[in-house]
Amino acid sequence: MRVVSGIQPTGNLHLGNYLGAIRNWVSMQDEMEEGSECLFFLADLHAISMPHDPTELHSNTLEMTAALVACGLDPNKSVLFNQAQVPAHAELQWLLMGTARMGWLNRMTQWKDKAGKNREGQSTALFSYPVLQAADVLLYQATHVPVGEDQKQHLELARDIAQKFNNDFAAEDSPVFTLPDPYIPPQAARIMSLRDGSAKMSKSDPSEMSRINLTDDADTIMKKVKKAKTDPEPLPSEAKGLEDRAEALNLVSIYAAISGESVDQVLSQYGGQGFGAFKPALGELLVESLDPINSLFRGLREDTEMLQAILARGAAKAREIGTPTLDEAYKVLGLVRG
Ligand code: TYM
Image 1 (cartoon, rainbow, N blue to C red):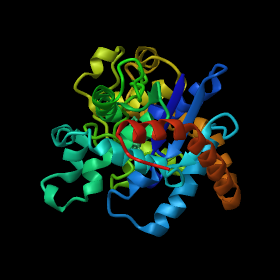
Image 2 (image 1 turned 180 degrees about the vertical axis):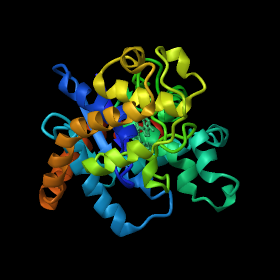
Image 3 (image 1 turned 135 degrees about the vertical axis):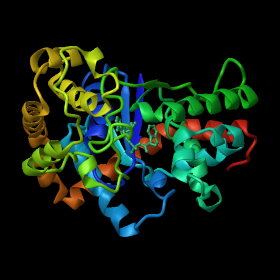
């Protein structure tokens, strides 16, 4: 089993990232069997597909590294690095660009959402972003890719690219790439904005009130939960009563994901009560579970040298693991090297 996943170091790590992905990274790392390997990276090359501030990107990359370690990622158990220190990601992306089809990329919902009506004005990196994402996982022969629901389509594309490349260039009995399987958690795969139950919680939402950052202090968390959009109805006693109540469902789902209960179990406790009672309980639960992450993060963030050393060590290991696949890809394409 080879587990590979990434996160963009744009802004803060929020509750959606944590519940949808990072928490699973940590449990996969901790439950790993002998002979398996976990690689987790900061997708800094993806982050330059949108307009960005170089100073912020630099600082966010270290900040996100501190946040991941604070969440329980152990650089001695997992390979933790940033793409920019492993040139094979960008190289393999180029090698795969001959296989990926324009039509496939045009269908990506994230491209459509981010580009909006102004496709002509977008960077070519934003368009070919999913090919880099395919390279990220194919380079390491990933078998499992733990992600939130929003990345499912990108991973299906990675499988299509791998399959076509294998078909076109590899012998039938020795494929160059393994087809990766997305691992999407049964619960909390899509945490929604606190201000709008129809939009996902996201780093790029201009409103800070729309998300809970893992680095928020207790007062901020309580305030954001208190101000979260809801409706005037009391909570129902069963999950089906939350259909058509997106904001209420989101808050109850967050409570369930953090407490490890099902939505029905949470409702059996809070059914019939209003948000005046539920919100403080949710806020306290969040503060209690994020507090240890928060204090660890604050300590780690100060130590820039240590964070850089973690990334450099992880990158050296990643380069070693990725080299045979990259070499094979060059070879089957007929490219002369050395
Ligand atoms: P990114 O940085 O947007 O998000 C990192 C992880 O968090 C998950 N996630 C969510 N899960 C539940 N609810 C939400 N509201 C929510 N928001 C984010 C994402 O699904 C993701 O798992 N393109 C990727 C980064 C990437 C990558 C890869 C992932 C680059 N290469 C290779 C996997 C494999 C991205 O922008 O994720």
